[in-house]
Image (cartoon, rainbow, N blue to C red; front, side, top):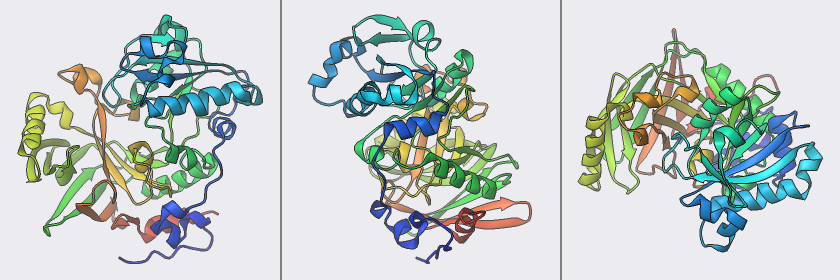
Length: 405
């Protein structure tokens, strides 16, 4: 594996030894006031609330009953680090009011629209559209599954700002949410400028059997977008935290890429005209492959590629994709709806509501050890740049990060 010697102008967390072992990066202690104050400036005068999710919200939210049950680690982190933090002085420190906790019914799918039903800690049945969205300036959604897409649509209608922090765990609290988001935003912008207006991206995947699969994604010279964590001013917007990503909405795609399914089964996905059209078994459970192929045949929109993203931060593996897809040297594809990213795939285009998800497929050493991203190349006019090799940023990205410091 080739070395990437980092320029002296870069912060310590981009040094070679930290890039190789991001778990050794030193982070400041998590501070709720710093996080909210940085991400949402201004906060003075804002009314804030927290949304969490359960399969039985009406029972588990009343009198904080979930605290007396086993499980619910995300929701308990929301209570301990956000709800209690707000009540213990952060509201006053940032000039905010509110701090209420509400629970909605779990969607059981990434970025599926939320049902309107919601309950407060007294057990009262309320409406998101009537009681929550119009009455809060900042909404923090700390949930099991991502709600970025539906909340992005709602914030534009009702005028609130917010953040989605699904999968919140201790590693994320102590690393991805402890960083300085002004630095995260600046680094994301440096990499966005390095990649923007790309005509295409090519990704080579090396399999254990020696095969190399290549996926080509057409971008049509579009402006790259960034998830950078800052949600400043008062314009409606939803931040995805942890942040640190440059992304595109593909306009075309073809080729092949590998897939590791939840049960460990490995397959090769065939892509034509921006859509996954077929999966073939590498190893594992043929029934898993058959089920995916049946889903593609029944509702072809589920195979549409709606996002190509690249991580921009140096962070330790958290076990949750919300952080792990933000790690520099990784990339991810996503299938399904992309309207929250400025794309053209809407929930109404799917045969079934439960199919209208936005599902990330993350390629990272800890997540997909059975195959390697041997190289990622950006094509822009006559320019061709290697941007990732063996899950590590190539010289082109390192030089971009060192720019204007």
